[in-house]
Amino acid sequence: MIKKDKKAFSMIEILVWIFIFSMWIVSVYSIIITTLNLNDYNKNYIIASYLAREQIELIRNIRDSNYNKIQIYNQINPSSSDHTQVFETWAYYKIENNFLTWVWFPINVNKIIDFWEWESMLNSKMLDFRLCLNSDSIYTFDCSWTNEPTVFYRYIKIDEVKYNDWTDKVINDAFKVRSKVIWYMKWYHEFEVDSIFTDFKRF
Image 1: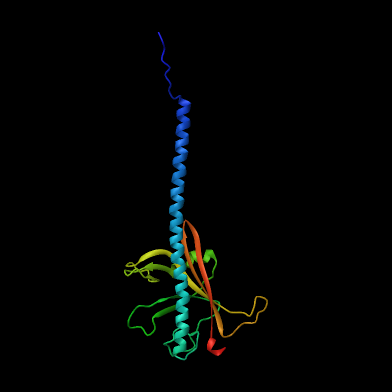
Image 2: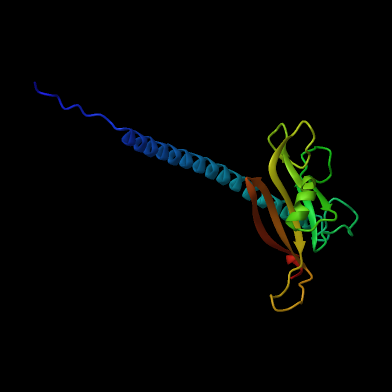
């Protein structure tokens, strides 16, 4: 009588196959998670870049409006008759559009008090400059219960402009604006853009 040669998987072969298949599943899952995180980061990075550049444009709008009204170029509110309210160097500000129809000037500027740009201070002060989305999908500092909180926080810092890095001589008719947006997605991220504004009509 001829015996038929029956082949079957051994227990070791089955375990090896399960191990290889599990590693493949884990690798695919890791790639998917990494891709999703990268997509979220890229989306937030693009939003942060627009939010930071918007603040620079708002400062430029203020400077140009001051020129149109023949006032001080760095006056905070070009519609105000108080010419002493100007941007201070080494100071932090919140700035945003004001879409209310009855306001004299459509940009709100508020100084941030008692703020230092250390991460420990950011954690205790960040609610002061957190951005929320209103019903019109506009980013605003108004985080009342009707507006949806976002992961973004933004502010500007006004610095002096020096002739170069090796001197303390300051250019009086100019200031530097550093616009910064911070967001948290698993860890700390930031986007920053700088611009120098001069009283070019006096140069």
